[in-house]
Image 1 (cartoon, rainbow, N blue to C red):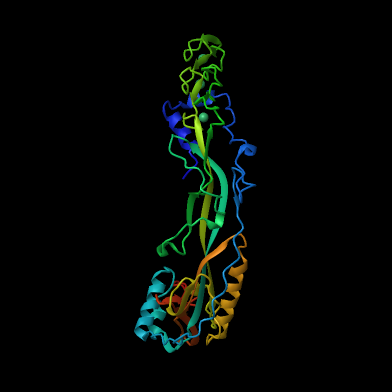
Image 2 (cartoon, rainbow, N blue to C red; image 1 turned 120 degrees about the horizontal axis):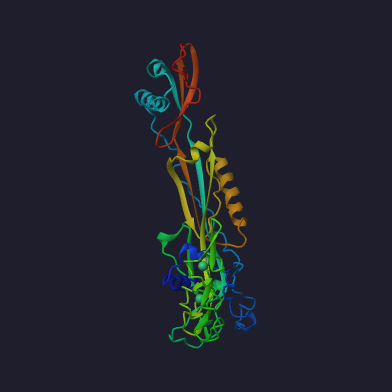
Amino acid sequence: MDFLKPETAAKLEGRASPTPDEELAEEGSDPSPTAPPIDSMDKLPGYEGLDFTGGGAPPPPPAALPPPPENYGQVNVQHEVPSTERIREIVAGYVAEHCCFGKGPIEDMKIITVTPTPAMKYTLETMTETRITRWNYVPWRGETVPPPSGPPPGPWDVLITLEPSQWFQNLNSVAEVPNTQTVRVCHDCRGLRETRCTRCHGRGYTRCSSCHGRGSRTIHNDRRRCTWCHGRGSRRCITCHTEGMVPCPTCDAQGNIRCFVELTVKWQNHKDIKVVERTDLPDNLIRSVSGQEVFRAEEQRVHPIVGFPDRLVSESSSELVQKHGQQWPQERIFRQRHSVQSVPVFCVTYHYNGKQDDFFIYGNSQKIHFPDYPKQCCCVVM
Ligand SMILES: [Zn+2]
Ligand SMILES: [Zn+2]
Ligand SMILES: [Zn+2]
């Protein structure tokens, strides 16, 4: 549910949209109506310090860690080695993207070895939840407001469920805390259903923007009566149609408002990746490509991976699980999942023009990292 005031104000404005000229004529406006006095609000158990701006409720203590996983299955994936033909195709695609690269080496390079050096990509995702409460109000249109059936539940005791399809996403939800609502007279109009027009300050007329209230304008040293306001210096207020009063925007002219404690729940998905890679290929290239998943677990809280065949994977997992456990003290860990992917990396050693060097092909999508391509400018004769 939204704070209704801005919507109501827009609706009122929409009845007579001011022209840009009229907008200029506005003589400043009254401050928008404030909230009901905070001292007059109900003192609800668990919500004693609540105001209209909102504050976070510290989360309950975290859930206990589950036992560590025992079996990692087959983690040594034998990635299919690309053929020499396929490697030349990949190099040709790479050269085509760089207009200045010479095509000569594509066919002329001699591929000596293709060495598999798979990388491990560890990903931890933590979906956290933040709960913020505040007083809010909406116009009361006479709907039934049942008396409280008991004390209101604490911010973290209000049940808000998510479908599994919504897990690990960034989401927001707004709800009313049960047993907190009351109906009261509108603080803005004191129940009169209308308030003083802020455009004309209740006068019904606004200063003419064309003559700035003088009633005349001087053009080429000739003083002429203002045709805009017919010399009056003022114009009829288009907001209130000279009434000086407008329907109260706070209660939408109902005279009463319904107050309640509003709970905003914010879910955020935090994702971290660590790459274990032992060649000269920049590790960050591995972050954006996929490989073959060799491990996956999902729990309310995951246990760091222990005893993975590659020790650096276990260490990466420990480090990130610990970091995520401490990084957001004002957020509750809602759910975690982690996975390990074996990402194919091939170091291709080639011979061209009397020199031996290497480049890399990596990821399921067979991307190439070839910073020292031998003919980077086709104008140079090598
Ligand atoms: Zn009102
Ligand atoms: Zn005028
Ligand atoms: Zn007015």
